[in-house]
Image (cartoon, rainbow, N blue to C red; front, side, top):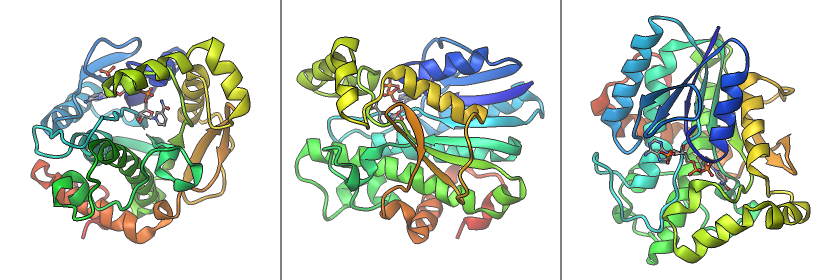
Length: 313
Ligand SMILES: NC(=O)c1ccc[n+]([C@@H]2O[C@H](COP(=O)([O-])OP(=O)(O)OC[C@H]3O[C@@H](n4cnc5c(N)ncnc54)[C@H](OP(=O)(O)O)[C@@H]3O)[C@@H](O)[C@H]2O)c1
């Protein structure tokens, strides 16, 4: 029996992934969820609260009773119309949900990962200016400033741009976290596979739900087969929900050829997994190291277990 722990399996392409994982033979799928899940065993998790992350990790350890986790899938995410929201812990909401809560979850569950376990973090091509995705691209991955954007002297004055920056920067953080994790001695000793997954652009999911009505409407319409299919033929970065969900399941189940990189950036293009490089910022060991340590400081009141301490300053 293999055990998979996943966030973001209740809607969008993650729900397709969850259904496939739950059907894949002798697998126990545990979903961190705010609402009823389409597959697997749901355990309450609200990523806007670090206490909820701690409670989720504790429930998992209790339910598993020492059995190891074979795959950890950190797929949940939000995009908001601005960067004005704060979580109960006082952090900017997009950064807190997309990066900080997942970082804490990774640290808390790391001791329970099996040798040769797989960790997948869902990122986005929007973190990379080269993809020309049209959102404000990340200026930095400074955790302190992302957690408290009002302290950023170069913050975007327009709320919409600030919201886009919060999203794309949080997705840069996902790639940098994968980079740090993969370079860790403990990761190498346990031969973990670490993948940052860029699903391309997947219209029709729940991701646009907090955006303006015109954007939400366009997002839904472009996700319909009648508009989506012809567009996907024209633009290689566009993918349908089934392709994006199936590709994530393939990564989790190891149904791919591992590229010979220290860590892998898997981008879905024309419905196929490709192994490519993330942005220049995402390839910086210095940034990755700083983000890891600064994130540890931001969640430190939540006391981290000893595993993966080596990188902490
Ligand atoms: N769609 C795209 O074009 C695209 C492109 C690149 C990357 N991505 C990334 O892919 C991932 C999945 O996105 P999607 O498009 O499938 O969007 P989606 O349909 O909105 O799915 C987001 C998932 O995250 C969960 N989630 C959000 N906030 C949460 C919270 N506070 N606590 C616990 N769970 C929370 C949602 O749970 P609920 O069901 O409770 O809302 C849902 O399961 C995200 O990380 C997104 O950033 C998407």
